[in-house]
Image 1 (cartoon, rainbow, N blue to C red):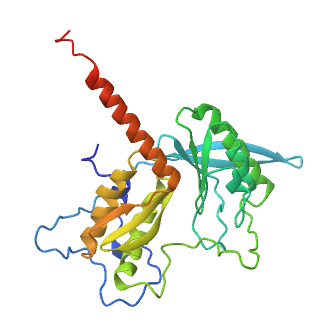
Image 2 (image 1 turned 90 degrees about the vertical axis):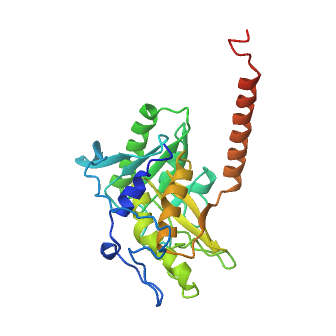
Image 3 (image 1 turned 30 degrees about the horizontal axis):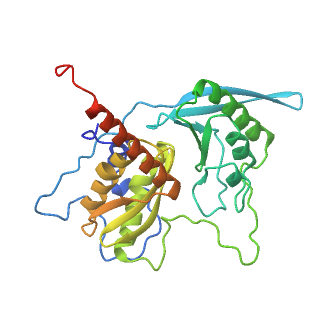
Length: 302
């Protein structure tokens, strides 16, 4: 598994830099180039063709309003994370006026807390087995518990999304901040005039090559800083709890950043406190299983 390139990397490499939608960037004296800056030990990154297979499957979700029938289509896409499923309601999800391109709700309390409470997310989090709700610009990613069954969760998700879209209710409410409250989240990849030249190049590469591919997998990426040659990143949505997230960072994102930007030495994944606790508990569990296996007598000695 580790030797295979992540699916997102194949899609990212199929996007030539010249054809990528470019955002405003600082006036840098250097520009990203498809030619490696390292003359010795350079690794050729192939530009692979974009896969033609589509993972979208149309789902028919009927809804009746005011005596008239209105039918909408909600599409679903599988993700690399077996416990996450991507729903496309064919309408805007995150309001355009919000500074961040995504919103993530990890607890029922977060769905009613400012600055962006969501009635739909509150209902989705009440479904038995749902652990998180992620909003992209035009998609919703639902993550479930490992022991939950999609056969029970999927119909309820369809019903709630259909009801929200057809009723015209706001999926996300924007609560005005009171005086003294902290500012809302902003896009971490947005241009900042205080960014150094290297940070501007890192953000540009993440924005134009990495983010689109990760969004296709039902997630997103946050830039958390650049210190001593290491880029600090955090995966969100379906990628946050994916088993292959480490492979995605190391074999995919790290390799691409190091290939194009010589100042980059590596990538570090930033974890929340709950995620660190979960990883530590999992490591302890694996060590316990390993010790139990070593303590068992082999058939030959018996």
